[in-house]
Image 1 (cartoon, rainbow, N blue to C red):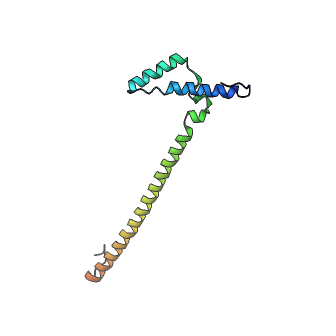
Image 2: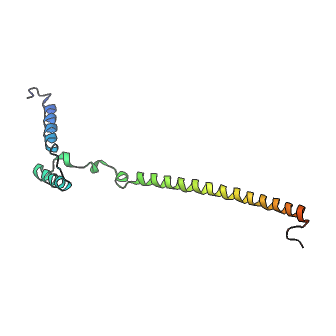
Length: 120
C-alpha cells in the first residue's frame, strides 16, 4: 500500500485506525450483550492501547475531583449567602413595617380614645 519510508508511519496509523474501527463497529442489541462483547474484545485484543482509559494522564487533583467539589461548594455557599441576605432584608423590612403600624395604631388610639398606650 505505502512504498515510501516517510509515509510508512502514516500508513500504519491509517491501518491501525481501520482495524480499530472495524472492531468497534460490531454493535450489540442488548446491554448484557454489550458487556459480553466488551469483555470478549478485551480478551481477543490482549488489551490494546485504544482500550485504556486516560486516567494515567490526569493529575491528582483531577482524579479526586477537587475542582468539581470546589465549584459545587462555591455555588452552594453563594446560594446560601444570597438566601440569607434576602431573608435578613425581608425581616428588617417587616420589623420596620410592624413598628410603623404600631406607631400609627398608637396615634389612632390616642386621637380616638384619648388614651396613651400602656398608660392608665
